[in-house]
Amino acid sequence: MTYCVGLLLDEGLVMLGDTRTNAGFDNISCFSKLQKFHVPGERLMATLTAGNLAISQAVINLIQDGLPDPETGNVETIYTVPTMFRAAALVAEAVRRVHRTHGEAMKQQDVSFDVSIMLGGQIAGRTLRLFHIYAAGNFIEATADTPYLQIGEHKYGKPMLDRAVTRGTSLEEGVKLSLISMDSTLRSNLSVGMPLDLLVYRNDSIDDIVEQRLDEDDAYFAMVRERWSKALVEAHQQIPAPDWLSP
Amino acid sequence: MTYCVGLLLDEGLVMLGDTRTNAGFDNISCFSKLQKFHVPGERLMATLTAGNLAISQAVINLIQDGLPDPETGNVETIYTVPTMFRAAALVAEAVRRVHRTHGEAMKQQDVSFDVSIMLGGQIAGRTLRLFHIYAAGNFIEATADTPYLQIGEHKYGKPMLDRAVTRGTSLEEGVKLSLISMDSTLRSNLSVGMPLDLLVYRNDSIDDIVEQRLDEDDAYFAMVRERWSKALVEAHQQIPAPDWLSP
Image (cartoon, each protein chain N blue to C red):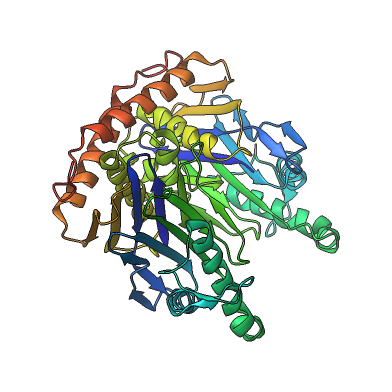
């Protein structure tokens, strides 16, 4: 399993993923699910992937190697597509191509064709956008109403995002909220695991990218977890008891 | 869908359930999922049910009408079984009987035999216990390590319980925490809905039962929701930003 979250804020983009992959509970590995595609001064894109690792690795390879545009026949890569929409369409086409190659054989082995990809980024002078591409190659985009997307084990970490994240949330708050959302997931699902990969990108500044790997010993994440837990406990203790409950 | 939570605390028992049932998004009804079985001075038991409403209603009827004990042949009801363990076994036998009656026909209609039942309570002079009975009739019991059980849509409301609930948690805190857990679920899953049914029972006092139905206008639940939301927002705002993130 996996948990990845992306926040599309006025100030920029936050993308956070765990690194645990598992083929059964007794076969756990660490793979980064965050990939960055950066052309200095020109474009910054990043993907987060969930689902079958063989599929997502194949897709990430295909979008870098390039695929022919269905209309023009010109080969395009994630580094050359002219718009974020075309970048999402390129990922989608790569997903469908992997399905054409491996889908039938996987089905015969009773392995489901399970992949979800988040794609965020900006091409200089254009709008910062965030997409979620599904296993069928269809995709949705984050909007002002719901400025975050999640893939993988999304339920544990969703309530806090629903309460707090708006487009106007600052990048700083966005980083904290994504880490808090991840913390709730880590506590409840063993198949989501440290270290974490985080990318923070400031809107309209293609080369202003912060990348952090947060491991078990990371002091900042430990502080967030501890203060958050303490604040939650204090918060419910300070709520008065109902008067219909005799003390 | 459904969300129900039960807390087995040293001070007593908290059982909370929503009331929404749905047969598709366009067919939503209100049914209580909380049933109380009380013999004044002698026993207090209660069930919370999730899954197919026809199955759970049939089970609740059977345990009140009675079933023969598999060993003695004597008919026992939820009001006459001598121990909580036998009460859980009675519920389990009722589930299996409903499966024998309806399971095959349901399967032919592609309706899954989906039911989960929480059973909590105490017989005077004996131990307060809390069980979760599955669709196959097997069951587990809450213990000191994990003093709460959930049925239905459990993920959204789990992180807070994991952080805060221990056997030593007071009944007052237990009520607040179960309502907070429900609030997170209500916000994220449309198929879980108000009003809520709450039962609070104080250990070793068979007739000290508080029952509350909390509807949309309930002032206490509204206050809990508002203060909790406010506390969460303040909590993440007060956590310092990471120093690797330029302001």
